[in-house]
Length: 403
Ligand code: EZ4
Ligand code: CO
Image (cartoon, rainbow, N blue to C red; front, side):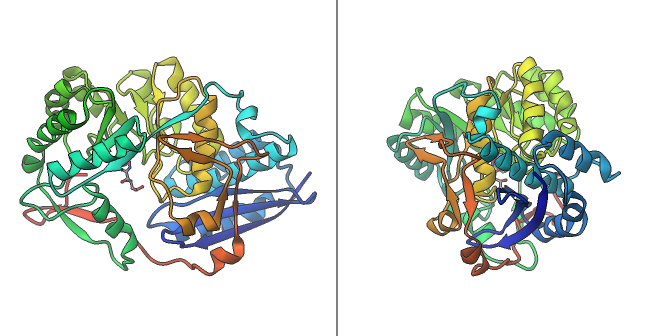
C-alpha cells in the first residue's frame, strides 16, 4: 500500500477546523485533525507546502517511522504548528492501519482496559448561585465529574468563567483578539467560596474540577490549592503558565489538591519534568496538539510509570476527529484519568460523522474499523474558514498579564 494523495480541508461549521485526508493507492483513506485555534491557516500551509509532498509514495502503515521522519526531518523540532501537522498525519495513518486490520483503533493500542470513558463538562455563570444551579443540573444529566467557573465581581465577565463568555470568545468572528481585564486579588478569595456553595448544593459524591487558565504565580497557586483542600477537588487545572515546569515544585510543596496541566503542551519534553518529579497528577495533552495517537501514547506510557493519569483536552476547538482518537487512547491505556468533553453542535456532527458516542457522562469509541470519524467534504466546503481568536488579557493598569 502506498500514499497516493493528501488533501487539506479547512472549514468552519461554528469553529475553524483543519482536517487532513490521506488517500492510498488501494482506495483506503484516513482522516486526521490539525486544528490549532487562531493559527489554523499556518497548520494548513505547513501540511500542504511542506509535509504532503514528502509523503507521497510512502507505506502508510509505517506510522512510527513517518512520525519520526516528520519530527526529526524538519530540522526544527516541536512547536504547536509542527506537532499539530504531525498529529493530523498520524491520526489519518492510524485510521488507515485500523481500517486495513478491520478493527477499531483501540484494538491496535492494546485493546480495552475499561468499559467506558468518564468525562467532565463545564459549568460557568455570572454568580455563585447560578453556577451551583448549573452543577446540580449537569449532575441530574448523569455527569460524575463537573468543572465549575464563576465570573469575578467588579470585573467584566472574562473567558473561561461562563459558557456564554466562552462561546462569545470563539464564535464572534474577530480580526484581532478581544482584550479582557484580570485581577488576581479579586479572583483568589472567590474560588473557595464558589466550591463551598457548590459542595453544599451537590454533595460529596461528584468530582469537582476548576481551571485557572494559567493566571497565577506559583505561590498564589499554592495558596489557592491550600484554600481549596476542604472541598476535595478532583483537580486544579493550569494553575500557572508551565513553560517553567519547575514552577510546579512550589505548588506541590504546599498543597494536596491534585494538579493538572498540559493542554498547550505539544511534546513529551514539555511535560517530562512534571511527570518524572511527580509534580502533577494529570497530563492534559490531547491527540491533535501532542503529535497524534503516537505522541499521546509516548507521553501517557511515561506518565504511567510515575502514577500520572491522562486527561485529554477536549474543548470544541479540538475537532470530532481528535476527540475520536482521544477516546480510543482513553479506553486502551491503563492510566486513564478523565476526558474533557464540551460536546459539539448538530452542524459539527453533520460535517464530522462520528462512530464514537456520548451518553450520560460517559463516552464510547464505537466499534467500526478505524478511528470511526469521517468528514463530509461537500458540507465542509459550504462553511469556509472565518478568522477568530481567543481573547488576550491585561491587568487593570493596562499591562499584559504575566501569563
Ligand atoms: O482553553 O477552548 O480546559 N479547557 C479549556 C478551554 C480551552 C480553549 C482553547 O482550546 O481551558 O477553555
Ligand atoms: Co483548560
